Image (cartoon, rainbow, N blue to C red; front, top):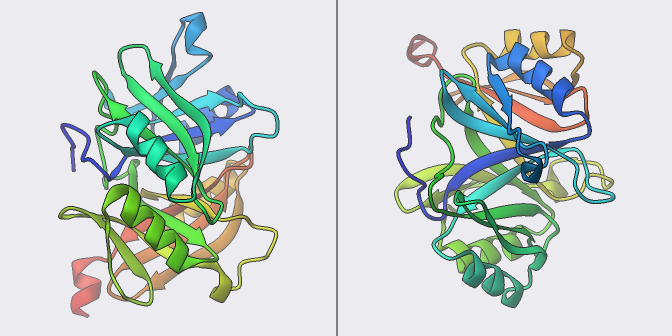
Length: 258
């Protein structure tokens, strides 16, 4: 899918905060075929754009705050960053960075939900975010991992108006666009030391081969490639700088038919 503009309430961008932008760029370029370009302006702070065939798919930036973890952050599109940040605080969330302008691209803020998962919001102006979604080498799914699913669901529904299914694995939708899900960390065996978070999935044509390649490039395999019948193949990894991400390969029609 090639979004032409950000869908309000849905994921619109993803950024990797990393201690070594060049090394991270080398890793993801080798894995996904990205081209990475660092903004030369001093005021851009080393912000680096990743593209596929000149279409933006993600970004990387240095760590800006003490104690900031190396991690992928998912951003959700909003009409008004200031109003959304204020509402997040009213609903029990925390504003970690107040809304600020990014040149003429848009306005963003860094938030944390009441269960502890961090995310950002983006009010688009000249830049709407993903130029590709759910295509090989691009993000395709955003999964919230939390230990308090009811509290998280209530917060995000109040903040973004999402539709949340009542399946064992809840699916998240903004309008008619389904974009993610919710993992209950309290019942899935996730170690207590792992904090609530948003996990970003990237689409690939072959999850097992991509996971093997990522390991050869220095990533650590957290979850070996597995098959979920009717859905596809998945693997979870930690990149060489420490950021966790997942791979997804869609179920093939011939496999479904079989």
